[in-house]
Image 1 (cartoon, rainbow, N blue to C red):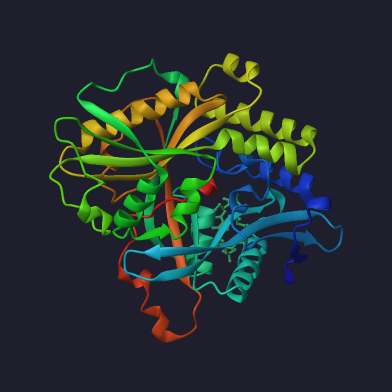
Image 2 (cartoon, helix red, strand yellow):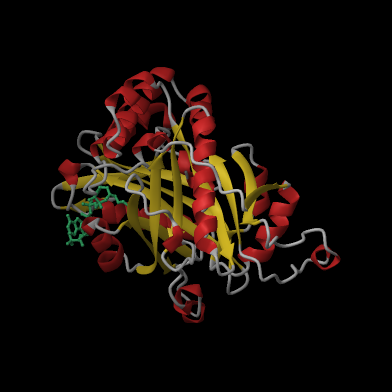
Length: 395
Ligand SMILES: CC(C)(COP(=O)(O)OP(=O)(O)OC[C@H]1O[C@@H](n2cnc3c(N)ncnc32)[C@H](O)[C@@H]1OP(=O)(O)O)[C@@H](O)C(=O)NCCC(=O)NCCS
């Protein structure tokens, strides 16, 4: 409990039975303060737990005023197991969805929610905690760095493009885009992700999940790429190649939303929330309102697992983007293509320079929860992690 100013607040676990509507309203009142005024990763989710639903160990806490029972804050936490390029597996606590009602800010409630979720993560074995915020969000940057001692570990750009904003543009004939069998994709990612600073250790689960539409490689036909069936590859090491190639996977959020609507909550609540989110996102993207009114649902395709090798990544990346847009135009309810790339990722400079692609600058923060001084010799000290593999289940 906190007792700061005249605010007595109880931090307790979220109850789906009693809190869902109020938390929905709280989220809508707290749409993030970027100049576009909207975060697609929060309100449009509608389901207060959906970004962490895939993780078996998760929690959602609310801050409740003791005098009148009003809910004035919310936060979520989950446990992830991630591999790192430095070797080994780490138990990571991930914090997301921190919101404090605009009428109750600067009273210590955000700080109290952070402390409570960190205590829970520590009890569940987390060695580190992670969170992300938009770069221009001063309140959360100050809270995380000055009050909660987080350090900025990496910087990512989220790229978003409406699928209807472009005419169908074919991939040039000299470039091949080939779908991999899921076992080939798992093999290739496991082999290549060793170089990434952080990646989910259950990559195979992600790739086999029904929301994952598949994994493809993109390369110049005349160059070819890796022969996955070669004897050397069967032993687990991939033959080196001079070719340029890009691997990517695509996650379909559209079906996930429908699933949440059907299974978890009263339809009416979700209709209202979806409609609200839809209007916001379409105005954020400056799309015609006619597109909003006729469409009853929306989602997006998330391009994840992007990894490129070789000298000629520019043409390949353009083709990957065209391919994803084309797929988006054929997937029902898919209105956007979205991807997230670390600032140090060589592919970032090859994302097409198209005025209809919006860019959101996110910062990732982390801290070690260990009190043991030796444990500070950890991945946080090994330099900025600019190459984070973004887990599609968070979208
Ligand atoms: C960020 C947010 C959760 C902070 O909640 P809060 O309850 O007001 O935070 P606290 O009162 O605990 O403030 C703790 C510290 O954060 C920093 N801080 C909070 N609001 C700030 C602001 N508007 N400007 C600058 N620093 C701020 C200060 O360092 C503050 O300590 P101080 O009051 O001793 O100076 C709240 O502003 C919010 O819900 N914003 C919208 C949603 C959001 O941005 N969430 C984070 C996304 S990851």
